[in-house]
Length: 132
Image (tube, rainbow, N blue to C red; front, side, top):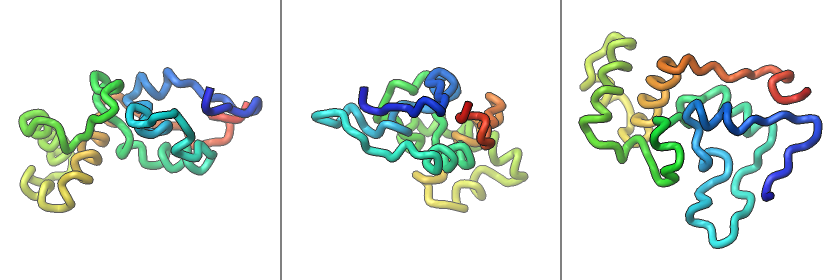
């Protein structure tokens, strides 16, 4: 066991994995480590940063175990569906949306926003979510 959760903290892996949060978001690129080690702090502020900006961390469920997956690496035809959805919600054209930010970073925000809406993801941000 690499990470030890304090007795007063509650953490449920399945709640995260079943909502599109891959291992790499908390544990780093374990597939590239010679020896698995702490690569991220797993502190309260680390968790809250993710809960407040969940779009940056969601991926399609069929990509949960693909530790090298990136939204920018998706096939263009697959990305288009995400862009069309988010553009429609924003009242913009797909081209406007694509030109409004750096593509690789924005692709993740678009995919994450789509999945957050689709799955009704609303991570708790109050103390009782983890401290019991």
